[in-house]
Image (cartoon, rainbow, N blue to C red; front, side, top):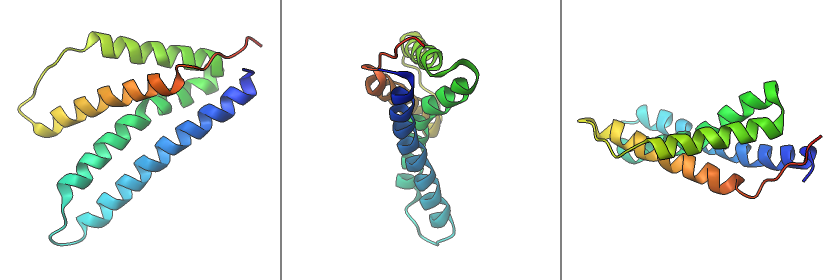
Length: 122
């Protein structure tokens, strides 16, 4: 596919991840002001949505410097390296463990969402 089409499609996917993360943060922020709010579910939602958005943020920043094709390739390679290089480790903090698992899932989802993107050379 041409670079313009790829950029538009990837921007749409990234925007969904950014919006979901922003919405989750907003819900948590509102709940923090309410007495008796169920925070753990909202905190988990923030961890998961932020982890899903993280590779999109990295790709977005790289796109400005490298162009869409190189940014996608580099971000995919970094995600793959991170997944292959990480083992199962645990922390005494359940929040850290949840964040690590969410990050791994976010990387897997990014790889799955961008798997079929073949961007033509300029």
